[in-house]
Length: 235
Length: 235
Image (cartoon, rainbow over all chains, first blue to last red; front, side):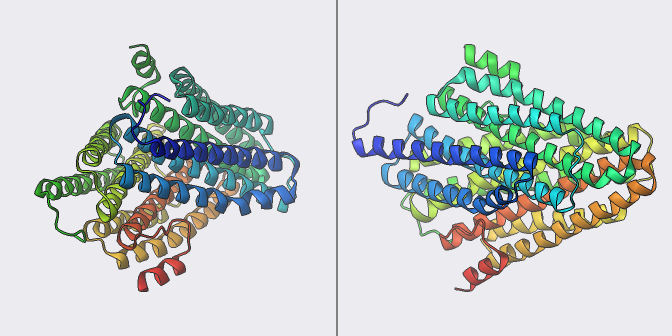
């Protein structure tokens, strides 16, 4: 922890509890993505329904952590680094919740695809590949949050560029595929939305990594390029 | 304003400044959506480039308001309703910033469409129609924020259901259109992403309206249905 020792030990305990809860929420969200992609691969209906049903748990976790943060601000009146830590948490859980929404969307698309018995899924290897990168980004973003590690944060921003590129490539391939066989248009659109959901997961992981830089450096790096962030970290 | 009179008049002035800035940011974001849709309609290249170039202004506004909120928390140590007000602001500007991103995406799609000289845009009337609803939602969300008006907030949640329905209808029509004429697939996908961006603008407006309910009722209504919110407001 970077913050100085507090007069109130209770304060440290509060912050520790909040960090633990964010990591638990993050772990759960990671599992949701993993299950969504697994269900998409093997058409496991039970798993599809589980991902959809469990989304409300992610939402409940966000609301609960938000509430704890409000209580900490009201009771402990944090300033400087401690306040930035709380702000980082409040923003991080918003992105985690939205990653959860994207996992749910992937599961819903998997349901549509399997309900229509369309087992042949174009560009499926590419989808799994880009999903792997996005999952790695979320995992790294949580590590970076836990250890306040700036180098990992910078790597995530680079990976996000790769995910965006992969998304555009999948889109181009799907368009060609649809032109060759218009009967596959519906399925291709579903796959396209799955690719889009994965691309968004990458965006959210990137947001999370930027909050870590803000927490540590006290400087807002949202909306700047990867190069600028790396310069910022070296300083 | 719902909060009680403060010992510090400076505090009231701080809160007032923050609210004014959020409304300014909101007004600017509304203009960005309007311009993006206008540019999409008439292919005005200058306007397309302006929307893309101005997105960084939206980002800068978010960062500046965030900073003011942090300062208020650190200096004034707000509790209860005042703290909820600040939290509402911090969450609202995140959604406003992302609405700005969607406006930029629409402008980028307009650029692609006009660069390829594909003037015939399928489902364009429907796109303008759903964009009107989404813009109305953003406007209402800002009104609801300014006046802490719960009835408007409830209307927005209802409108969001309509926008989602319109999006699904546009998607179905585009799929039919692509099947009939595979040469139109590229343009159709671009239109589909424009529809998706508009649908997301609706989602963000809905988020904003939910923060107003939280601010006023002190109760979190995220992730509940429109019926539940209406019940909550009546209580």
